[in-house]
Length: 116
Length: 112
Image (cartoon, rainbow over all chains, first blue to last red; front, side):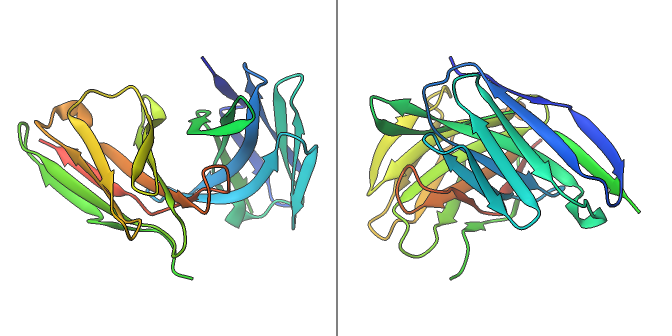
């Protein structure tokens, strides 16, 4: 059974700091990994999707890396801003014999607070 | 393109009642998935539909059911509601089952 763990559970940083969020998964047979952010009481916003064959993806100030063999992904946020405050979730999709298996398995999330 | 829409946004029911939640995916998306989010359990997979067929189902009791229509809109139904069913129910759509999942705002269900 796939288990996804995110460390730290909460993080508070001053504005402008670069930071790293960590995600680890127990079963390396993944199809892809996706990072989301969730604002309080809202749905999830997709940030980055990394296919299992890729090592990293970048979007603006965000960079996500994937090391499938070690079961790890990191989300790097450069020059953090108060608007980045949210819960960040990683989710993996299982690889079932070369095809994807619809279910996403989520971590518990990292609550990020960026203070001015 | 309009995003994923879910109706209603908020719902209050009493134990024993049933409820139907609706999800309209992004235009052109054929895959719809449902998730339940609670503070204790986090996000848990309910089911996934692709072209009107249920492809996967999570570990939820038979009281939870769903369906997808020919226009890709999806509904989920929960019968005989229990207090523990109080949660945020999220729907996600994608172009294929492996593509980026786009989530709706969710339906907040409260069972009294």
